[in-house]
Length: 258
Image 1 (cartoon, rainbow, N blue to C red):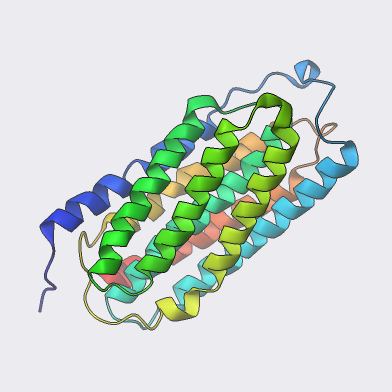
Image 2: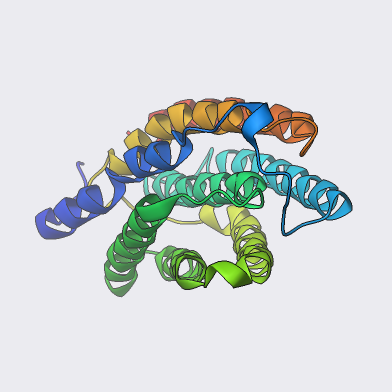
């Protein structure tokens, strides 16, 4: 029997999810200058930049583990389980991308209004998931809270004065790491979600598929960071691994959720 679809929720869900990949792509399309033109001064010492890239690499690996766990946990779930997992994977990828671009932000470059757009998109997703939670969708409320925390962290970062860039980067980094940690605690529960899909049956899966290109752009952006400034090779490899994990997860979840 086909599941009932709430037309108004489906419309809001798709409206909140569709802009995510384009917004991330606009952030990742940042035009970086040649290595010779990079600023010699940075708010972070060479050691601190090395420590940040190590944390970025760990965050990417944690994101890979979370995506694999969501896919595995929802493999045998009812229709709503794979969709809950897909929602969570979209949030995981978003957090992983935000963590990765911090490598470039530490180089005193900014992403301007693109980050403000990301704040709006995350807030819209949180609102849509909040509605799903009120309609009784398991995990939606927790996912909404995680996305709202990321939106709040980005909002504070965008508003931070230029002279506080160093502190703002560290706060943003810690907040997004915390969001990834919260997401990593949800995969097992996603696999226990029962019942039919509600809202738009394909929006979450299509969003995850669209994020494939975002992860490719993410790897390319990190590759353009001069090695003398920050060695991003490990982070690049982990982003590529994350991209593969997302592609595999979406193929499996889309079949289970259809």
